[in-house]
Length: 250
Image (cartoon, rainbow, N blue to C red; front, side):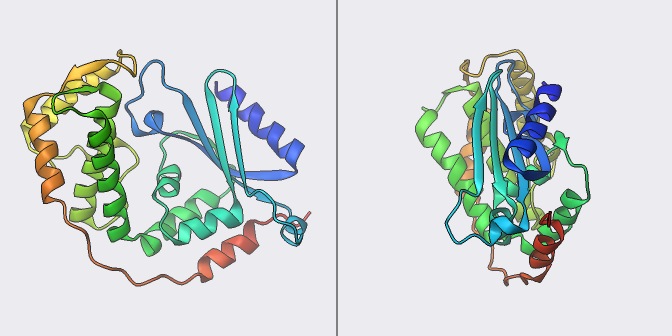
């Protein structure tokens, strides 16, 4: 699969006259709880030549493709990405923190990682993750039974909320990094560990009975999570500098 991904990136660069600056795995494979039948979710950032930005007609600033072998591609053009980064786009921050990097030939990723604290908005992030958990719970959790995949789609954002409350920083992309004693009790962590072990061999549609200790933790965390305070806006200047630095000039 890695070879297919690298070949696909090179093909995109040649066919579309772009430069791919960064590519990673997103979704469950990056979060650390993939099922045997999980798709590959490739996310990437690319740059057009300077002349592309000087054309008056509106052009697509994204690339979405579905390729064989369940390879789902989604990429954002550099200018689009930097504008989203300035607004604390959580999906983008998670890409940059992915443990599975397919393509990062230069210092671009590290430069953006260093800027995340300046642009991180705890209030927005708390709202994002709490809404995500509540939405999945409302649609897929009847109070006891739930697809094992969907259970983790509730647990991960709730742990992200607790992380933000405690650390006031961007949560780790890797779910396991947030499973710490200061965020949940030992019995909750042990129950989650057992479900994680079960998920390693379970299909994504497999339905489980959520343990009472986990169900109660979910209900309590949703009830107790409060929005964070406001944050002053960061300067656009470092992002403008990145735009100039990483836009190819031919």
